Length: 568
Image (tube, rainbow, N blue to C red; front, top):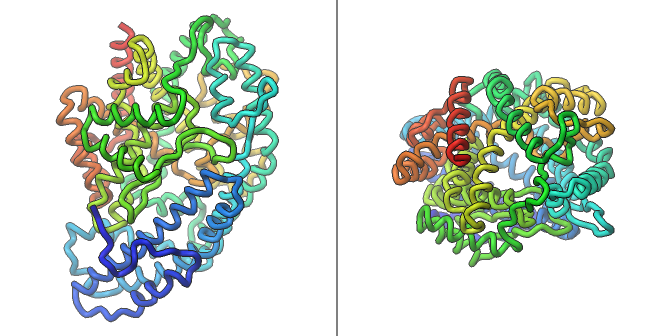
């Protein structure tokens, strides 16, 4: 496991910028006379960054676990609006010192090319006037989490956190589904205007960031900021078109079959029916509490690789899970790497559903990625591009599916596997909607909230199945984009899920053909971190970095074949 060199204490407490500032001053003023000096500076900078990242991580983790705790919120906002901006400015000084040194060009290209490329991109993008803008964006994002984390749906006189309320959408009682759906959307509507206001501010701030960096729009700026070296914005638009052509028809057929299973007539399939069970069939219920979910995951991961199971156990021993849904938690789920500890923290809002099982496997895949890169001494290579990070997680979902019988009897296990594969198909259109929506938002930054909602409704029709009747609830459909937290806090971080799913399907196909070789390729790719370009990492995993229409069509056929096998 990677250990800091001793330049900076790994357990340094950071309450304000003055706590870490001296280490950056030492690096900025350091005399560099040899190649070894440059490498030492790079490593010390990596160590200082790792310590900062870990302290920042805990401020975010604590805030998202307890959005209703003022002290945690204040600590996170102190990091994001006061400490992080100073860190950004000093980091830029260190990076300029590294990049401008003549000896830097002499370092081993095999080892340092990816670092050089990333460093150049970040230096090209940096503008000091943007530092304060990023701090303001972070504060807006924190407010979004506080608003959405506090949402409760009142059903049958009882207040429920959103994840628990959503469980009722899987009922076989149509009236119960409708009542739950209306309660959920009534609750979302209470913060709609506040979220619109915050998002307007975030769009304006992000657009100014792009203009300050001499970009025409934030979309192109963010594409470069995310280090997307291996594909273009035009490629992303082609991905959207391929999904519309080759995936939407499959998603429509899945929806039609579900409608027929519910016994609902054509034209009467409503938004509260989408997750419903047919009369007499209860929803899948794999566990009651988060500890059961975790224990099942530990057992399942052991079947893949003993080290995977040990990793989860070590995390549990160190209190690195918060799994159960409750009031005051931010929505969603995540795996947050702790760069000095060498282990991550997993956050979820589990409510006893099959979706929670998938999320646990997904975040567990991210966690294994963290463990497999923690021997890497450079933080830049431990932090992988999202396309690769999500390949790690989505592949884990698929490779663990044969072992989900830990949560189910034989019949329910089969149901869970089929629903998962159908969910992969149904996800691609939503991925395309979210990506296309953000392209439009930041190419048209002067838009009004009404125009924004209207465009989202148009995309929902373009990539939708055409089978859901929204009559009487059109307004709810229009602001449905607000339920996707990435649009607020992680702009343009979404197409990665689609690209990664294509990688995961290839890994799963390899795994089914030869489990050992498939798993070995998976581990090999994850261990590389971001030390190699994405196409090279995927090649090491024996898969293609290819999200062309031809590859999408081929992989959708593979999914359909696997579904057909399960339906036999």
